[in-house]
Image 1 (tube, one colour):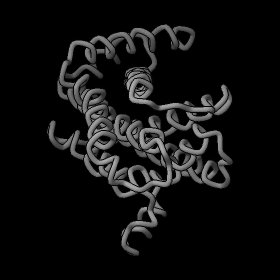
Image 2 (cartoon, rainbow, N blue to C red):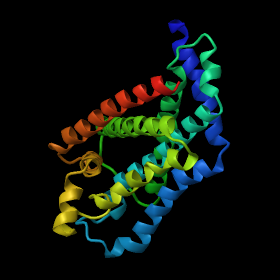
Image 3 (cartoon, rainbow, N blue to C red):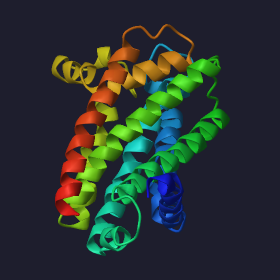
Image 4 (spheres, rainbow, N blue to C red):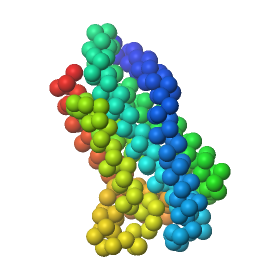
Length: 252
């Protein structure tokens, strides 16, 4: 059974990816809406926002990427919920495959689909004037941070999708996460915020992740922000994974 683990996961990945490409709503929300935010902030608000940089799209891009990922994981919860309601898990478990393969298939789908969204958004940002002096290692580090962030949110989505009692409940958890970048340094420096808002913004995970990615893309010293960002991502991933597996074993 274990020797077919990766081939079985490939089948589950292909199944979920076909569902994504058939859903225009998913594509619009995950890719087009973050691009619309980027266009709005760069060409409408960008001239009035003081960030200390000449190229606002360079400053803005890390936060837009996190918003895109946060939007994408809502569909992971939705797909898990629908599979639960339709008895898909039970059908697959009747086959000679690992019991966790269906869940891991959804997790891998989230990583792949969000990676595609990130690439598309970066290509659009390049057209809008985004430029980065970062080398290959810095880009790989950015990719690793984004993958860890996606994984952390995906396991949170798994908890929501497996424990929700309605479609709305499965996706509702993502709204606070999507708005976290707006209360961070993603769009403006935190020094411009009122003291209470600034304190929250500087001590929530999105700010450290945004600052780490921004420093890597601008080829600047990352400092402690990288380790703080990694600690947030790894910590959230581990805790969410344990809770998700507990819920999975209870429900399936």
